[in-house]
Amino acid sequence: MNINTSFKCESCGAITNCRIGMSNRTEQPLRFCCPDCGQPIDIVIGGKSGGVSGAVQIEAEGPFDDETNFVDLHLDFPVHFGKYVMGDTPFMRAAGRIGTDNIQVHSARLRQLDETYKSFGVFETLLKFYIREKWVPFKNAIEKRFGGTVVSDEMQDRNAALYNAIAVMMWPFARPGQASDDIEQYMDVQLYLAQTHKPAFHAFIDEILKTEFLKNLQVACLGIYPRILKAELPLRPALFLDFDVEYQNKAIPMRVSTDQFDTFKDLYKDIAEIISRQFVLVAGLNNLLKRGDHNAFKPGIGLTKSGRDRTPKNLHAFTDIPFGQKDDFIDDNWFAFGDQAADNQLRNAIAHFKTDYDDVSQKIIYYPRKEGMRQDKSEEIHFLEFMRRVLIAYREMNRLHQLIKSLFYYHYLIHVAENAG
Ligand SMILES: [Zn+2]
Image 1 (cartoon, rainbow, N blue to C red):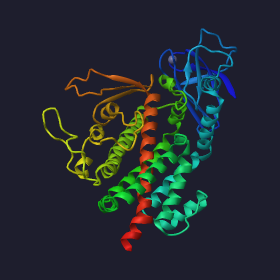
Image 2: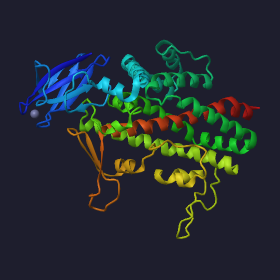
Image 3: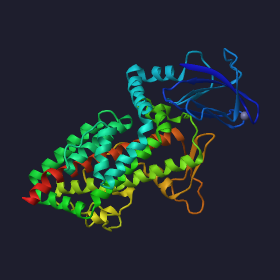
Image 4: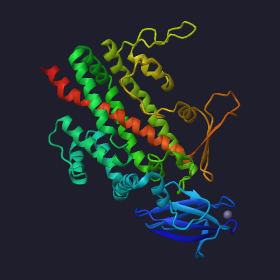
């Protein structure tokens, strides 16, 4: 369903015609800026805080003409400013671009978010119970709020329940088909290592357990899920780009203040930091596969043109290597990183340099290279494209979290039993 309405800007009096496509979300916060003066205009449909600010809603005089400003708004899709075309709604345009099969997948994901967004808080609490090892409330929450079961007090059964709840809750953000492919590969790698290099493989597991590296990494990953859920609104149009990447220069139809942008910036930085630590597991397994020792990097792989050898002495030394350089020390990597998952320029800019966000144009200016005092080589991306990078980085983190999960399973089911025996 679409509503045609008009808004008179509170600052300059300009009129903007507006077609609002209804999402199924109970509360729909929408925003655009007055095309004439940039005044932010907020519209909240439904919920407790419904209303309009920054403009006065006036009766639409239909059909809309070409002379008046026009904006299409829909919470679930990238939005369009320009000419009004009757019937050419954001939904119809999206369906035309990506086809009805893809539209159904996109809609199914958003439907789940519409149905579950009120339980995001319960999910966050569930993760906290797990992290703090509060097993009674954990079991209660799984059984009463997530329809699951914790079949015993064994860690593998708690983990099964935990990862099930995560898979269900986070499904809208997953790339279709990804998880099962990855888990198969992880199992293959571990079973192969158990057959060919068992003592060395177990030494690797001992080390990542004893140092709590694996546990700390798991806890860090668990901390990301609630933050992705909180970013649900600006991630909705970013999910659409799964089917239509050309749309990444469009605007998003909601308000994102500079403060909120800073939260998303931190989220991106933190996810990248976790991926950088997850690289350590990938490298350790690669060393085991190639040389039967998780600490053994390929000799000379870090040899520079000037003859200096930067090859890490062991996995511990590798951990401290900057994110962007880690991949250089992994020979013929068994794990294929996703495209753009570790965009180093953007990550560096966000982690170390100034980033400017203009909440009217929704453009981000960042400075990817070190330029001394002057920062004149800037790059620009749209906020929607930035949220796309957040989504891609999140998916990569989640893929590698499955590796952590499968290493824990190996430990609980095989490694512990053998150590005891
Ligand atoms: Zn205005």
